[in-house]
Image (cartoon, rainbow over all chains, first blue to last red; front, side, top):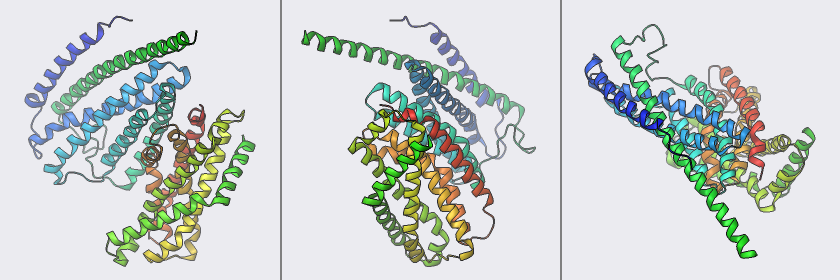
Length: 236
Length: 222
């Protein structure tokens, strides 16, 4: 049994600090948006969650590849952890979005390109997690999940282009967007800090989940060994 | 690889030609969906005609799932799936053969549903645009059969097989669905150009079939 690494504790302490700093920045440093008012503050949660969810799905893709290449269960645990945290973050994106949209757009939901893309991505990875749930053998589960993790991710850019030409209502990306899409420097700073905080949150949750899954894998291996020993003992 | 593909394709087509299970089941189901739409929307003909190609592809997405499930179920029952996995043949060839067979079954279903669709929704078929309609049907069927073949092999290994296939493959085929609806609308006389959607559909088909071809061997192994 490996001893628990110290690093998570340091990360968690840092996360706690960054969360406090982020909240102060969001509510006391960043100015209140002129037209949308206080509702706009949800943007500092919504956007970082969306970016980090995407990081999660990228990790699923890479880990799935590595798993097929190495057959090391470590990579399967990573893919699973990244998918779970990614789906959690996407769920939060899909909840925070409508809370903002109702007062600003007057509607909870619209089939705009970015919303639809997020929703379809959520469905793809929900299918990924359900698939894992319905396969009994751990080795089969890991291989089949990796297949879906790879094809699902390859599909995401195609979904993006299809939906993008289909319709667009979402505010244009405020960073790296067109000329009119400037963001107040104080708001930009807050957004970057919040993104870093959520990346840290992602890392902490990811590491915890990987550790749990590794322990479960180890336990399963012990159980299997015990079972084999029992059957052989009964036979002799 | 091509020889394997040919043999698998011929096997699947022969089964379908003899039983006609997948196409007839999918056809009946698709007609039911079209009838339900009629009732749900009050039978207002101009309205139905405007939304026709959307309904067609919705009916087709669900009935196509039925057809795909049927083909993987047959393999599971007869043990043919395991035999294909154990045989010393190229898995990519197996994928290609099954994919072509599934695409053929889907196109056959579309052709079978078309008359019902034309009658119920008063769809204006123009002779000049029939070529576009055929292209839209074939490219759309490829876009469904590509991931559908891969995911029915994946779903065959799970409990809840019938549920798992649509759950995995409908979100992934969203681009094909959107592009197919747009190209079919165009082929049925919608003004404007559909060249972007045709291009997108072709790109989607190429990318998704290639990706599925490359990972299929992992889904097949036992």
